[in-house]
Picture 1 (cartoon, rainbow, N blue to C red):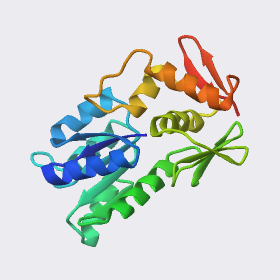
Picture 2 (cartoon, rainbow, N blue to C red):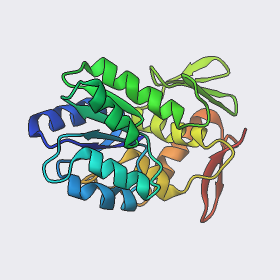
Picture 3 (tube, helix red, strand yellow):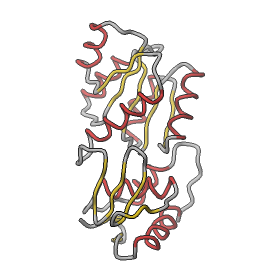
Length: 218
């Protein structure tokens, strides 16, 4: 899962980016609200976490334009404002959730999990597909009830395939889900991880269609 973080405070932004990466998300951080729309239109993200109090254009103004352009992405607003009116303004502008500063990282992670579940096909704590079960909270994968030891990257790729169970996911989309900006991606990176997953689950579990992508059948 790839998250776009928009926060102008350098210390807080770096701390949140680090916490999200440690939680096994690919996270890109921008501190200028002017970049948000162009970034969302050029790169696929699964979630937007955005501060309201941005210099120049406010987070609410940016959010309203995101919704006007029909960019379908869950949005979690961060703000130091805690009045009912502020929360109503945020939600009416198109936010899916609202978190008041200061907040605990555990609460941030919980709200992110809720939003990702809400926007996924399966609105629950676990994903099921083709005999596999992914526990989204602890990020553990089971096959026929047995825990399978996977790396964070293997889990991230498998999660995207499970969330799109029965449908092909392109190599580019898989790359985008596991790598944030600035990380060099080798041309065969996805193929290497798919090969590892096939060794663990069997070649027949993950199908490939040349020029289209990979999928796990129901």
